[in-house]
Image 1 (cartoon, rainbow, N blue to C red):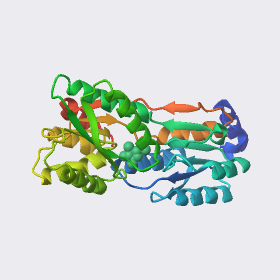
Image 2 (image 1 turned 180 degrees about the vertical axis):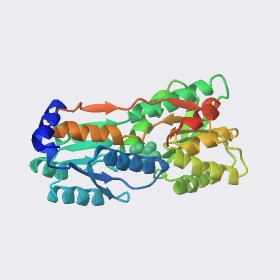
Image 3 (image 1 turned 90 degrees about the horizontal axis):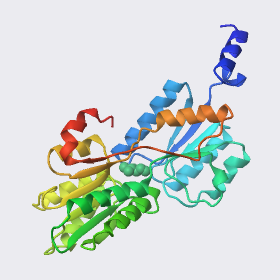
Image 4 (image 1 turned 180 degrees about the horizontal axis):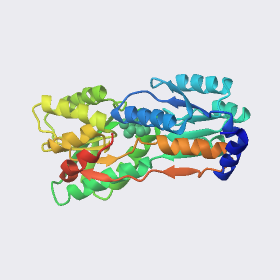
Length: 315
Ligand code: AHR
């Protein structure tokens, strides 16, 4: 196509002239590969970048904030068009975000938010409402355990210390279970969102609670719940029956565990953020203002619907 015609076509599509000359470059700092959710999230972002014709510089931080800071600084030095960040923890981002702002590079927060008073340091946040996810898990439990025993003893596997989903899912769950004073969290510890640590910490809970009944396991993600299910079985107990298992994410393996009767409910948290992220990158570069928050719509899937829903799951 002649350049003149190309420019006219771009203008008609509401795109600026630079779009004819340059591929947009997005630097993305991913947390790591701690869970099936995270892997699905990385796949979604890589695929969406390819589909949108955006050059993606992908940096895996292996769970370390310092690696994310290094990646952000490298993106600034490379003068990428936009930076996307999934922050491993909430705090400590002010300096590096100010550096991006000073360099004129907009930052989109994806999946997790940061806690910084100056909200002009990022252009938009897209992801889930983690407090609401915790509430949904808690409400399901209140409903499920209505009219039963005098005391319902819960053990909790928390996500990464200082991470938004760990803090918020704890908060939302505690808020919801206040509705029933019989529900008590008797032990709570981090297992870093990983299956191996979920198993390890659940083994320690079972040992520490020997002689006392654990009625419920609440895990901040499916991977930790799946690890804990193994620990419960190895202790000679039946997950899903002897201990109710409540978790968050909605990955395929959780649905398979529900079909097998080992997990009771998963609250959905969608990792499929790639397409909205690429749209936001294009909108930003076309001079549009992004919404401050783009919250994903999500559901709650109890075991009763697992067999029907499993074939439809995308991650
Ligand atoms: O930030 C989203 C959370 O991080 C997911 O629930 C979890 O599986 C992941 O590691």
